[in-house]
Length: 348
Image (cartoon, rainbow, N blue to C red; front, side, top):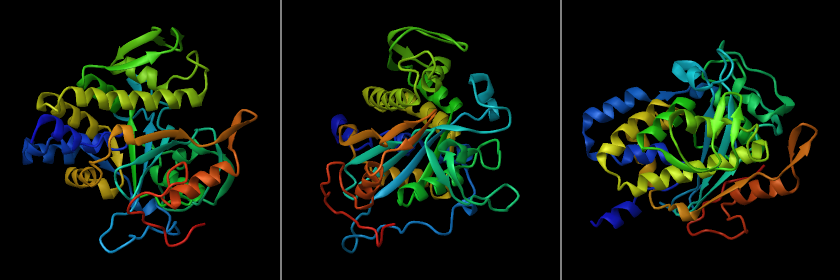
């Protein structure tokens, strides 16, 4: 197999970043799989709601179905993240949320960013003591991750909230912390990103222009929203999307060499908290193989339609509901069907 053919076999999307890294070291040996298994943290599936949107069904026996993955960025101070600028002591927050819909043809995907300040209904969620909360309306979207005030946050509650909001069944949830972002950018020798202006406040120092960011500077670029660009959460989301794309291109450009991929896979898995369905290196490999034909050029990044509501955000209707409906029906953003479409059995 030629080098160019082998590269095309790897998934080139932000959603599959961690899975790709594991897939890329298939030949590294059982000892490395064991190490990666020990790196990965899973969250309790008992916190996922029992009343959920229906799972998609194959259009024909053996056909593929759509896959929905929720990517969350955590600012937990746990396990060394405090030195990189994590959130409040003892409480994990998530200011980054990207819902990635992999179409049933497994050749196209769309990533939808959900603004952290969006006012939503947070459904019943499980607390650390085993009890469940009562649903609450008009809550900031990112507050779902803090329900229960756990050090690593509450990914299951955020997943429940996204399912309630969109009517889409979330197949997998992946949480990446600051430490992981820093380590992964270091492992690839820095990631190129365009900084719109000089930033010199809140302990963050970035120079205007195209920069190679790694470690602390990468974290600063990903997390800051004040004093950069339009000072908005929306601008920050766009920078995060661009950074992920740039990192994937950097890995591709280095030719998937083991000296690069081994430390990158190690760094990625150390930073992950995932659902039990992705809780081992082999499960990550299986997932990556199922979507390995997606190219970066076949992935669209958008932000859920929004408007300001005072100092908060509301989704614009009926536009947002129309977007969720397109994804539930496995249609592209312009309303077209994809080959091998799997329809859900019912819609909210």
